[in-house]
Length: 348
Length: 224
Image (cartoon, rainbow over all chains, first blue to last red; front, side, top):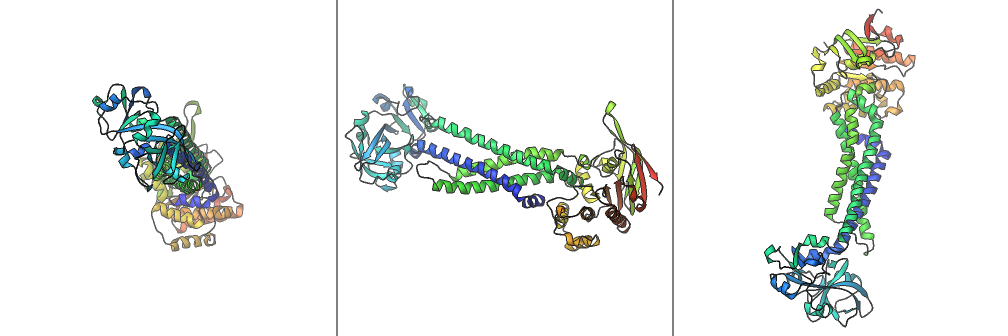
């Protein structure tokens, strides 16, 4: 790859411009992917922490937890290893005036979901109007022992512990007991969550079993939001492909006489093609590395209100995606190289 | 002893009413130690002759043999290897890779041939051609004459059996043209190479061992 490296070192400005372009688009891609992941997590983080496989809801609920009301008979006819979920969206306030929109989730302290919950501080106790609350409360100034006053109700929930990654439909979750949530939702069970998928024969009439991934897709606004991000990300990949194709095409067209003469002098087409692919690979790797570094710095420096998550798997997928697009972008210039006829360059 | 032979070579471009005979029934033989000039006006078929000799085109009829093996019987890969190892090209322009220094032009040949010639050999060659002081210069820092001398040195570096030069003096004044052609003649005689120069510059014909003329695709030998 002697020729490729020497050319890039000699034509620093030209290749730096391409690297800069790849960096800018990659940076945007990494930020957008981070925001997509961050927003997705805000919607579903609590559900992921449940580590469940399926959820049974009312058939008429369209997969929405808030719209699902299971009768006592339906709940009783389901296997008893599920976790009964009662949900109530409301505003809570602390005694010193802090406010938070929240999802109250009622569940049994012996349920598999509650047993799985991790605690970052405090204890895992939801007896006697106590609640284990999302870490978001902690970052917003709430403390262990604080009481949450539920809006339009006389209910007071004492914070006993904080749990990480506990957000549902972009709101922090407060886990409380079924007894605590009862006055708010009149003891309705919205859904029953199972660790394993149930056989269809075990699903009572009038209810519907969804996989957890299908349930997440039906969360209000979730699919529309993710699809919007997916479209933007897909367009950015296409932009990278076009940008690299155009740049490499122009560079190759400018070099065609030299490439023709090199072919006449016995340099194989394969060597010249590999050289171009190598250049495309190197410029995309450099662009991606700079974008990842700056993306990470951006994620750290942005205020915590911005839901951006740049994790390893995203970086790997995005990085490989950009590099593949760069290599694909080299296909048109490669065709030019393969087609260049030394005879025509020499001037027959 | 190397040789290059054209046996009844005809090259036709196009078909029907656009048919054009670029070379017609050419018989030609060159042997080691000769500087051969091929002259003729523009469009006479000189460059077609050169590109067929260099394996860049195949004749419509007839055969071209290098050291008794027929070029058209070789695969494309073998022809590429032949051009790298047996043939040196010196062209009017674009001879040198613009982003390589003079020294790197030679190192690039080493990389291509997977050879590791000593710097001493490169320095000897460049010293013979008076180019040693240009090692670190890029082509755009060289004069026209220097570029052609570097191109000749680069062509010689692979120790080819023959060198094909297409209008190597076209961009040079008379003095520099004579120096370049003298250099090629010395290389033919001292290094026992076949050197074929295609040109329309008749001032050079006294320097050659043989002079051929191509007019309308037909080749004749010119008496010196």
